[in-house]
Image (cartoon, rainbow, N blue to C red; front, side, top):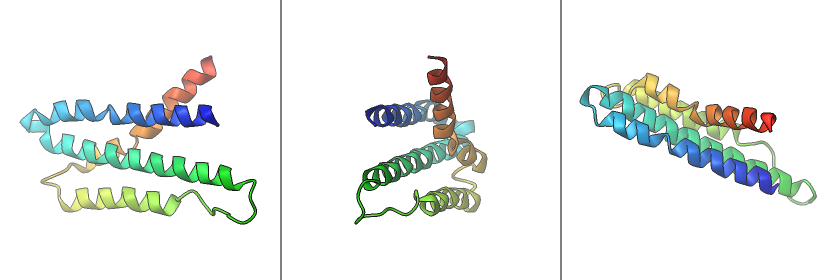
Amino acid sequence: MPQFESMTRRILALSLSFLIPAFLLWLVPAYRVLAQGLALGIVISVINGWVLYRKTLKIVESAGKREARVYGTGMLQRILLAGSAVYFAVQKTEWVSVYGVLAGLFVVQIVNLFFAFRSMRE
């Protein structure tokens, strides 16, 4: 389990580091709306990854106990967070880009795939 925890923390930290290029993109006035959408998508993606991580830990901890059972991995919560970000982007197109939000929502999954392929090579 410590390997899962350390890997998840590295994935979330690396995903948050993608906010730096988004900020640099925000400095260019022509790409400001895209950068704001990308930043919103990355933040929601990291929150969703953290929620999944916490729910997974609760499921593993409650596997040996009979009194406290955990049902699910917070899928509805994660869908509502992502849907809220996309809905906000659709409503406020002058503030955030829908394409940026959609691209940012997949950052944790892409970083996770990178780590998975790297660990398979080792």
